[in-house]
Image (cartoon, rainbow, N blue to C red; front, side, top):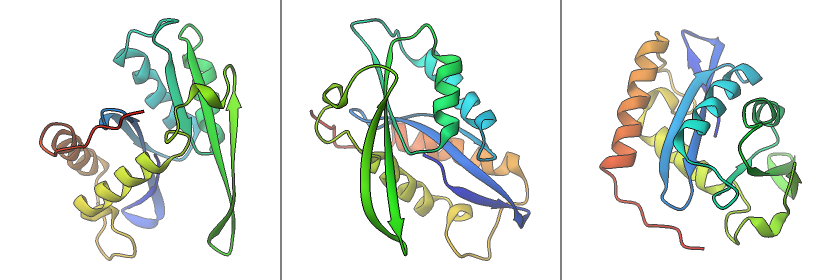
Length: 172
């Protein structure tokens, strides 16, 4: 997940990159930074720590078409078995006209259960976060003056999302 956030002025935008476990709806981690491979690298490094990935337990990743994800995955997950599905949405005048699914590296679309071949879970968590953190509201006069304050607010919301809110488990 990533979306823009204004820091100090409209010219200085930050993006929130986040990892979400779809079956449990557990928000694994997030990184705040520019929309580059550098920020994606910081997020992907943490994915290695959150699981005992083997040939029997393969990490499955679904993202949008941002090239930073592909670069970060190829750099940091060299010794971890994973399958990567990239969702590409083509738009015309703000409307989605075509959605294509590309499996990168190994595997095929059948490796991803029905209902997980999309980015809707992360988009839903984007909306939930946007509703809880006023800094992320669209077209607002409010903005955060310090990145550390924004990070603290995100950590509070990560805790609330994972340990306080009830989530319906996704079955495949």
